[in-house]
Each structure stands twice: as C-alpha cells, then as structure tokens.
Figure 1 (cartoon, rainbow, N blue to C red):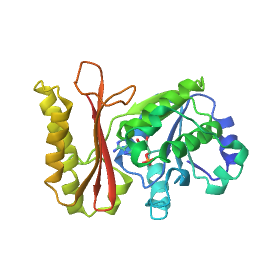
Figure 2: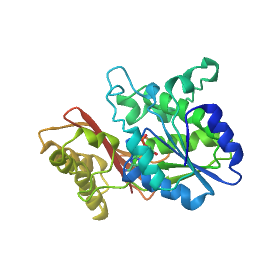
Figure 3: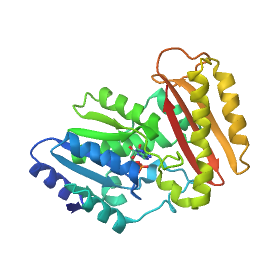
Length: 277
Ligand code: AMP
C-alpha cells in the first residue's frame, strides 16, 4: 500500500493506476463503517484509495476540530490489512494553501437539517470533497448513508458539475446494540455507547409505527421525543421527517421515499443517525 502525503505524489500514483479507481474519503479514526465502504470500493474497482484528512473548514470555532480523534498509525495498519492500493494523507497546508483553488458549492439543501445547527458544515464538506476529487481523479467514490444529507448533497454536486464520477452509497454499519459506528463514539465509554443506542431504538420506534400504518409525522416525532427524553443525558437537536429529494419536512407520510433523521447531543457529543423509509 502506497502512503501518499503530497498532492504531487497522489497525482503521480493516479497516473500509474490504469483502470477504475474507487475513492473513500474519510477523516480517519477508522471503524467498521469506513471499512464497509472500503470493501465496496474494492469490489467495484480495480484500485482503491482512501484519504484521511480532518477537514478544518467543516468545523466551527466551538466544535471539536482540535480534539477530533486521530490515530494515524492504527489507521494505516488497518488499511494495510485491507490490502488497498493507496492512502492519501495530506496536510492542511497541502489542501488549503492555494486560495485560488477554493470552491464554493451553493445549494438550498445545505441550509436544512444538519445545516441549521451547523451552517458552515456543507460549505466545508463540498469544498474539501471537490478538491480531493480533483486531486485523486477517481472513477468511483463511496459515501455512507450514515451521513445521508452529505450523500445527497455530494450526489447533487457531482451532477451539477457534470462530472463522470460514479457515486456508490454504503449502508450504515452498527454495533450489536444498534449504535451507528462513528469516530465520535470514541468520546463515549462502553456503558455510554450502550445508552447511546437508544437513539437508534427511538428511530426504530418511528419505523414500527410507520409499518403499522401511522402517517402523521407530528405524532411520530412526538413519540421519538418522548423516547429520547427518557434518557436524562440526551439533548435533542432535531428530529426530521423529510422528503428525501428536497429535504423539506412532510406532514403526512406518503409512498415517496422519506428520510427520517436526527441529531442528539449525548453530554457534549453530537450523534447523528437516520433511516430511509
Ligand atoms: P467520516 O470519517 O466521519 O468523515 O466518514 C467518512 C465516510 O464514512 C462518510 O462517507 C461516512 O458517511 C461514512 N461512515 C461513517 N460512519 C459510517 C457507518 N457507521 N456506516 C457506514 N458508513 C459510515
């Protein structure tokens, strides 16, 4: 596995990769969720490259950029075991030194759901993803459904830019209690992680009600809120039941695809989860 630190090295590696190239962008602290995306890339492409870059522009001043889990040596070891072809680990300076390369993708989708609490977030995500796409020049990219809104926005950005990249999505991978794997779970003890799985269980409460024919989204949200409020350490940021294309809230559930998504603070840790109905 090649370890690439500079843009130059990455471009040169790409030139030698003749065939399809599957790219998995990550912020590191790799877990089973990331590895499931790596497996998808490996299955679909001749070459697989993962990037590890904790992107400063997607964090606000008050967020956890400086404390975001970083375990580079462990990540490299894990990726070697996955037998991927290359890992790209650029420095902040490498990615952001040329202001002229900055890119701004504006879409109304960025201001909804996650964008309400984190107005800076998708500006930073689309900026870095665009830059990484230009450097890595992949034929395929793999993103997780865990970050459903991110997936939808990147899909739209690829279409908008008339890019030939094929986007593949990967299902959310969970631990045995249902908690979605996340690098931020490292902030929680094992006991807390078990408690945090109540978020997924509360989402599944909505799913059961939907399966039973309930269509009133306010009622569904109320049930979710009650379930979340039963854990004192939780503070609900939002629960949304939205049209999967516009991300607008819907009051009555119909046959079209619906995104049920939430963000919950567990003490200081902000956890997100969702399911598509
Ligand atoms: P991150 O390192 O958090 O930026 O995530 C990198 C990629 O991994 C994104 O496409 C995420 O959606 C995806 N991802 C994160 N957690 C999971 C999970 N539990 N299951 C599947 N994909 C995930």
